[in-house]
Image 1 (tube, rainbow, N blue to C red):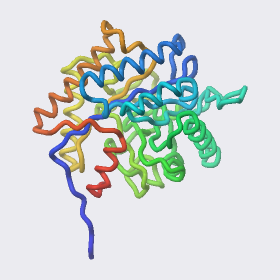
Image 2: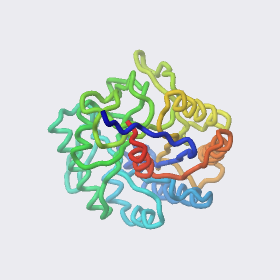
Image 3: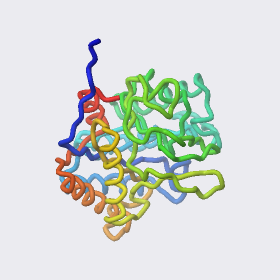
Image 4: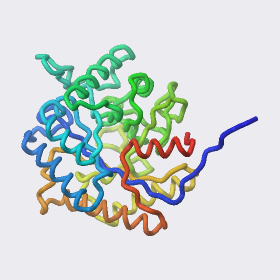
Length: 314
């Protein structure tokens, strides 16, 4: 039997960072957030990453509403080399031209196949029209998804996504990821929790591997080192290294670190502890690459997916 085996890349550490660009005053956005804060936040993060020579690592993942409101800014950021993605949740989504949005108390995980496909298609079309580019990367706000989500994204032509959150469990809010595979993979059309046969490639944010009790009884959380966590260098390095070590033990085909933040705070404020966390995240990833003897590679989600396909990854 002829079988093309999976290869492994043990020379490079891919690093990707992204900003979820939420809509002010709507679910996911800050209730005290303004459009001015949203703009300063995006431009401040772009300046920080450009100054560190990491332009290609940084992506801006915008809701359709944000893409419409700040389209000129996102187009300029794309021209400068920052990758772009559609960030979406159904709660509170107000399509352009509509006067009544989707219910605030109904997550994407609460929609069946036909309804979910229609709403994601609508969001995709609106985002593409606003920015004049194809939406090939999708992000699910708050890891809201069900078993229809990955097949729908695949059918709609998305090539890579960040949807899952292994260990996060909060069913009331559409997060049911207990037991999910923790690292990047091609997802399954049968279950969101396992690797499978779909063409789309799922990229998980770097997080702790062991769930901890959440704020509500019966809920579970895993921690990442987003800027809002305000973690310090040693804490960031501990989480990142544990993730890489787990990949090595599993013979995962490629090694990566992914971290997020949001457009709800002023990144340009150099006195902000959140700004310090972003800076120390960059420092920690460089330190980890050096410790493991790896070349640090700034990468978009598309770059990581292309490398996974080159390696014939699962």
